[in-house]
Image (cartoon, rainbow, N blue to C red; front, side, top):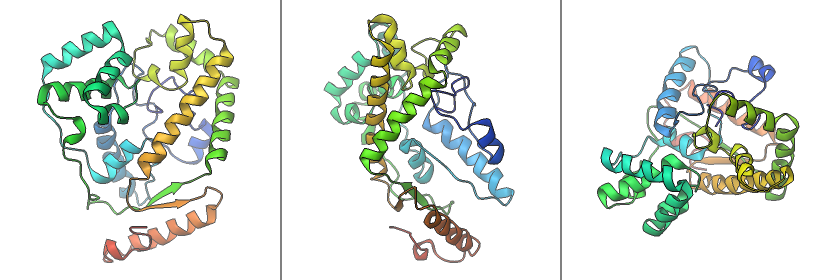
Length: 284
C-alpha cells in the first residue's frame, strides 16, 4: 500500500527524516485509483536492484507482502489466458453487487482461491473468477516456480515476534494512525476525487473508516475493526512466509545477529565463486 501517493498515515510510510538517512524506493509511485500488482512490482524491483548493485550497494527488499516478495525471489507464475469479455462482465457485476459478493461466489466455486484471496481484494477476486470461467481451472492450479531464480544471490531474514507482543504493537500502531491524522487523510483523499472502490482506498484503515458512512459506527468501533483486520492480515502473512524456503527467523531485538549475518553474506557475495549451496544459512 505504500506505493500509493497521498496515503502516508494509514500505510505507516517511513518519515522524511528516515528516508533522508536511508534511500527508499517504490514509495509514491502510483495513484490510489491505479491497480498495482505483483507483476508491476517485480519489473520495478528488478530495474532498481540492477541500478543499486551497479552503484556497488546492497539492495534490501523489505516487506510486508509475502506474495510480492516470493514473486521476486522465485519468479512470476505461469500466466493463464485472459478472456476480455469475461473480464468486463465480472467488472460490471462487481460494480452492481460489490467485491464481497463476488468473493462469496469465488469461495463456493473455488474454495482454495477463496481461502487465499482476501474478501476485499477486488483485483485478485476478479482475476480468480475470470480464470475459473475462462479455463475451468483454479488460478492456483497454474504452474508456480518452486526454485529460487539463479540470477540473484539472496539471503532471506524473517523478523519474528511472539504473537502477544505483535498484537500489542498492532494496537499501538492503530492508535498512532489516528493520532497522526488518519481521518483527515481520508477526507483529503475523498476531496481529491478518489472513490471507496479504488484499489488504494480498499486498504486496511481506509476501508473500515469508509464503512462508517453507511452505518452507525463510532470512531472507537472503527478503530477496533482496523486493529482486528490488521491482526488477521498479519496472521495470514506469517502463514504465507512460513512456506518460503530458506528463511532465517530472528527476533528483531537481536540486531547484532542480523548485522553479523548480513556482513557474512556480503563477504561471501564478493567471493561469488562459492556455490550457493555451500553458503551459511542456505536452506535454514
